[in-house]
Amino acid sequence: MTPAPESSDLATAELRQQLILAQVQLMELEDLRDDLRTQLASERVLRLQSQQHADQSLLANDPLLRELHAQNVTQLSALAAAKAQADALAANLEKIRQLADRTRQAHEDLTARHRALQERFTSLRASRSWRFTAPLRSVERLCRRWGGHRP
Image (cartoon, rainbow, N blue to C red; front, side, top):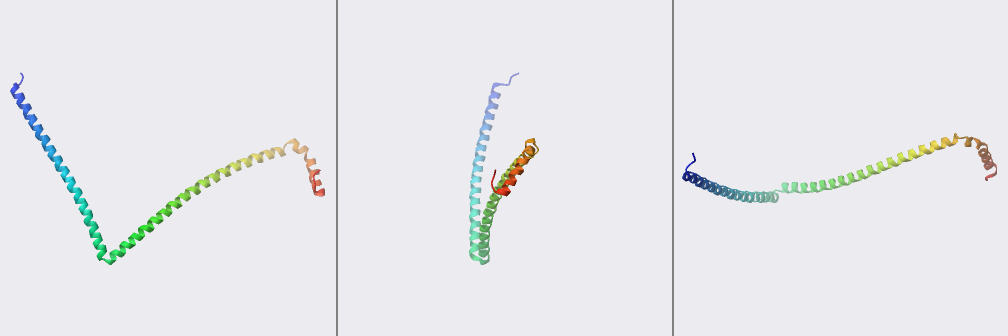
């Protein structure tokens, strides 16, 4: 059983009409949304302008508020200067830490070199040639004490 062609065409036409109406409603809703966004943006601008105007009129009419505002501005500039100084000190501290690391590394390198030289000197003194030449070195020291010159 197949539906009658007329009823199928009628249902398709009705669905097309509903689709067109839905698209029209969707476009109207999008237009309404855009209008509301524009109104919201203009209301935000107006609210900001009215707040600024209220702040300015309060500052103009109330000496205490003017004084507090001036103190606030002064404190904000002092805070900015203190922050800049803290940033500079932090940078200097980092440089000092890097220098300390390099110094520590150089100290470790020199300590290792000193140990190696000390071990070499100790092994040299323990060698036979050092012991065999000990009398010659003592004669050289005596000559230096008595004569002031080398033999």
